Structure formats: C-alpha cells, structure tokens
Length: 299
Image 1 (cartoon, rainbow, N blue to C red):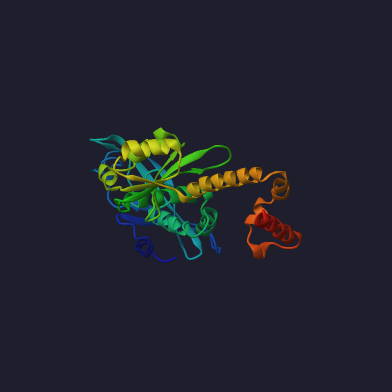
Image 2: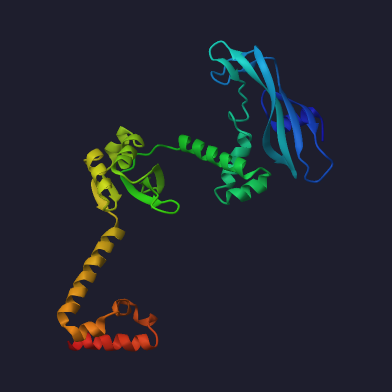
C-alpha cells in the first residue's frame, strides 16, 4: 500500500499524519486509515483556540472518498479539551463538520451526485448508508444556500403546494425570473405569508419588489397588501382562466334553459363533445356533434 508518508500525502489532510492502515486482501474491502494530529495542541470546537489541556478522548470514524475500488474510513482519536474561554468542548477537526459522519469532500461529492441521481443511488455509489447520504445532501444544500448570492428580485411569486395526503399545504416564496425558491413555510394562512415576506426578505429586497404573482387566495392578498404596499398584484393566469371558464359555463347553461325543452334534450351531456377538437372526434360521437351543431344553427 506504500509508505505512511505517501498515504499522508494522498489524503492531503493538513496537520495530520497516517499512523496505521488496516485492510483485507480483497477486491472491494474497506480500508481503515488511522490518523493522528501533528503536535500536542488541539483547537477548541467553539472558539478555535488551541490548547494542550485534554480531559478525555474517544475514537471516531468518518467515511471518506474511496481509493480505487476500496471504500475508506478515517479513524481518529478525538479529544475533549478544556478551553479557557469556552470550557469543556470537543476538539475541532478541519476535514469534517461537527457531529458529521462523513468528511467534507465526501459530503461535497454526494451533494453533487444527488443533483443528478436519487439519494439511494448516490449512497450505493459511495458505499454509505441512505441516512448518511441524506444528511450529507442536506448539509451540502445548506452550505450552498448560505454562499449563494442574495439577489434583489423585482418580481416574486407567492403560492402554495400540497405535500402528502390530505389538506397539508406549504406556502412557497420564489423568484419567478430566476426560478429560485426564496422561502418555504408550512400552512397557507395570512400569518405564514406575512412571515415569509418579512423574515425571509430583507428591507432592501422588499423595497425592490414591483410585482407579486399570486392566486386569488384572500390571506395571500391581505399579506401582500400589508407588507408590500408599493407592489402590484398579478393574478395567476390559471385561476383567471378557471373563473372565466366557470362564467362561460354559466352563460351556456342559461342559454340552453332559455332555448326550451327541445334544445335542452339535444344539448344535455354534449358540453365536452362540442368543445373537443374536430379531428379527435370519431364514430358515433362525430355524428352527434354534427347533429348538435346543425340544430344550434337552425335555432
């Protein structure tokens, strides 16, 4: 497997060195690489100050990027140090986050793979459990959300989505131009919409908004009118067409009743038949449509 110095160079962990490697002579066997920190001072997990006062130690493991066909596990004796500023804290390790079970570089790779494949497939690919892969994906997305540029959109959308069975709705605040989700909260009440507009948007972002696209849900309209008084409300075309279609159906129903019993008898149950495209109508339905249209013309 090469010397320990070569393995230390391959790992690329600054401030650490390889002290032991364990593995079996098999094709896909897991390698356990034991590492140790250089020096006798350990950084505090809270403030980062280095101290030599150690209270206790415990062996911990982290999954790392594989070497060829061999999955890799890093083993390190992590200390609990006594810091003058923070008290008793767990030692900070630079290659992994606190309470994580995978290294940062493996977390990054899992997060990138989960953008193009299911989480279960990424877990199998990297030889970790589904839970580890899922936590790595969430940590990757949280880090991306913190580092992404905070835009000042001029046009935003406020709508609800249904999650699961039953009447379980979530309110979504999004940038309609760039297609990015800016906020997500459970429920679709006026308080939820107000919290999204006030807490998930800064004062500068709220001042730059000129239009809000939403449906005709009254709590959303009240929240937008209260928080974004300078913005114009643009109704979603789906709901506008839905109301227009309902009004057209009501007019068609009244006209059929005004036409008398004969026309009601011929027009009953023919609504979708008359609205269908002609090339999609076949057989007896085409004859019924022709007869219905002729009666409408003669009447």
